[in-house]
Image (cartoon, rainbow, N blue to C red; front, side, top):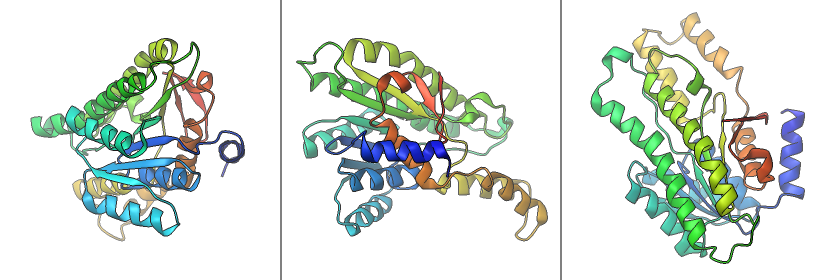
Length: 282
């Protein structure tokens, strides 16, 4: 746990309150999306979790309820505009408005470049790029529509996207994923200035190195199968150890996202935030 993370966490809890905010989270049934929803619910936010897998939503909502808190859940496919709109509509129906949209849903394929099939390419881009694009566009439209009397300079909403160091990295077997995250960078950096200046909506992105999650487990398993790394082989253990050694705990990533839900917009708009945290322009 870094000193900067401790400071960010304390700021969220003590100064940058998220209590009462209506927050929708795609990919909210597992990994960092679920943990973020759990922490937000603890701190009084009104949370709507969305995931394509019903069992994940059920488990996430049960865990929140077990802590004495509550949240809404919806099964939705964010690879389509209609699916994204369903998530936004559920949040608005439940809480009357949408204050924060967190576009955490994403998928990855570990497939060599020459073996990628059109359906695999299209499916990944539909979720990672399309889901984030529509999650940004449709959430912004909702935030604008619900704030007809916005005063100059008033902040009326936040949108948080997910990018990755893969956006700047070359990878033979993760080419499409890297492309998708580069697109998220351009989307976030391109939309942010005008949305904040003209509509009072802050747009930023989380850029984690590696999040302990079902997605990362799938990456390990796919690479181990492809390269024939068997259980107990030293090379397999070393590969996992190298990545795990660079993990921040799941709670660290989630705490930074919660911080982004309340941080001064001038410090994060059009920028990515790492899980340390650290920010840089997109």
